[in-house]
Length: 153
Image (cartoon, rainbow, N blue to C red; front, top):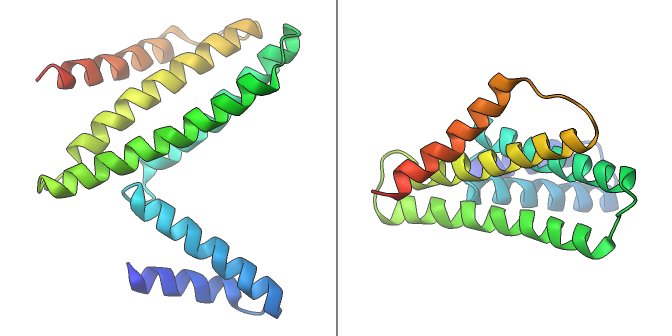
C-alpha cells in the first residue's frame, strides 16, 4: 500500500513546478487513499463510479427536459452518492473485521448500489425517451435480487 502510494505520488510529481507538484501529490495521495478505503481500484468500483456519474448526468438531463431542475435535489443527490462511498468503505472494514477471505460484504453492497443506480439510469433514460434493452433491465433487477437473497441469510 505504501509502495503504491509513493509510486503514484512520484509519478504525479515528476517534472512539475513546486505548486503543481504539491497539488498533484495531494490529489494522487487522496485518490490512492480513497481507492484503498473502498477496497481497491477494481472493475466493480469503476462500474459503480461510472453508474453514479451517469445517473447524476441523466437525472439532470431529465430534470432539464421536464423543467424541474432543483439545486437542492441535486445537492442531496450528490451527498447521497458520497454516503454510498462511506457504506462501501464500512463494508470493506467489516469484511476485514470478520476475517473474510473474500470481500463478501463489499460485494453485497456493490450489488445493491449498482442495481439501484442502474434502475435509476433506466428511469432517467425513459424520461428522455431513450429505450433500454430488456436484457439490461433484467440484469439490473437480478443485481437487486442478489442483494435481497444475501441479506435474508
